[in-house]
Length: 262
Ligand code: FBP
Image 1 (tube, rainbow, N blue to C red):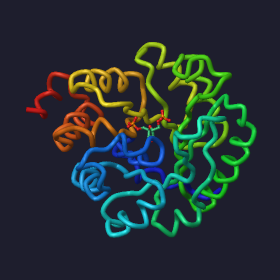
Image 2: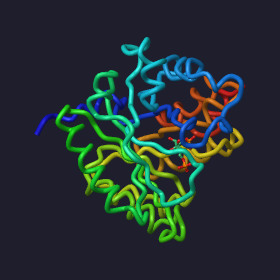
Image 3: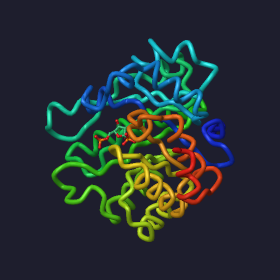
Image 4: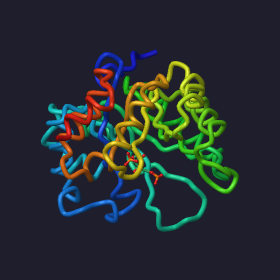
């Protein structure tokens, strides 16, 4: 088996990645006059010292291309808008080869656990996982329980099942939502086994609430975050980046992290 080059996405086994695929997933409703510009967010990713920038191929082609050597890239291979609210499924929009041509250091793929279309989703994921590994690329899986068979998308039992599925399907990094239950979430991380867990940030929170959440999450054994809106929607993204990083990489207390926001 080819060696999977995962270390580039981590600093001493911890990570903080910047996600920017929201234009497709949510639409411009997530953006303001600054962060609607991909250059603005790439600037944050590079100058904030993120471990990777995550985007769809269109942004990678038109914007990241000039920064190839400056920040690792994760190309999201599938995606969908939130307009047709039918069965949760996110189809492949970019090939693994195209991601490699764009300079990707890893590929990303959303898996809707529990969707009525789950068999198709798993089958498709299986293919891209093998292709990516043939190139030595790690696979980041957004493991999101969703659909009418899922009564609670963030229950510990659902999240732990999603984490385990991610491990068993061969994902290297699992992007999972945090449910705010620190003790229970340790079980989610345990179920992920050797797959590393990076938690999503969620919608924008007040500063103190976000930092408390990050502190709690880091105490569950996760490797870090793949965060988006809480950074680039912030009025001072670089300060918020420094605050979150201090907790992830230096184990800072919330009070110490708050100092970066002054
Ligand atoms: P945030 O940190 O902004 O929550 O981003 C995480 C993320 O997974 C994005 O990568 C993605 O666009 C979005 O959330 C999808 O969230 P949902 O499927 O819940 O709308």
